[in-house]
Length: 235
Ligand code: SLL
Image 1: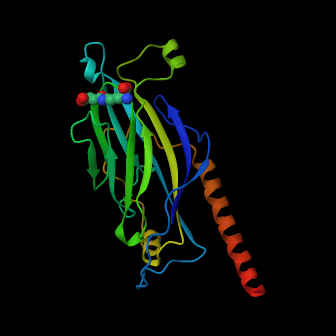
Image 2 (image 1 turned 135 degrees about the horizontal axis):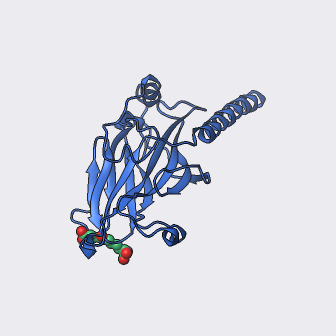
């Protein structure tokens, strides 16, 4: 079963600070088949952190009014790492005014770049590797083209200043399959292929905060395990 804990950031150039953390349920345990490696590990959870959002540039006064901005929607590892050991493909659902609005990326970088004029909500569906036995995860990234009103009051739109809206999501796999657990445990950090976005999206600076959350989750999971054992002993 997969669920998420998320934090929102909204910044002009460098996303900073986990503003809030909220738990959101998403998905149920996929249909089980009793085959080797498919067995689920009781009282265990895996956490895969991800960042996703949009990065937009104003194209200036001379730009065509229907293509006033260039933007990219993306899903990435918080440290620009390759997530393809866990992700099979990412599907981005754009507004129907775009040609071929369903874009499928089956390798990193998971990004779509377009030009347009309006803001809308972009659907992102993350499909996990088949041996995970998990349902796809639906995320939503509101495309942000304009800086906040107070920032615009201080300084009008600038051509080279990116407007970034990013969310941080901890994807939590409850009782993962043994084979998936082994795959993630054996995985070593590998950088995703570079894109134009890589230098813009600096590495997140709220690692300490996030580490605390991950540690707290582990402590709670262990405590639950102990309590379950105690309960089993009583019954
Ligand atoms: C709005 N609800 O009214 C939104 C819709 C749609 C944006 C925004 C298309 C560009 C193209 C485009 O930018 N659509 O045709 O290539 O603000």
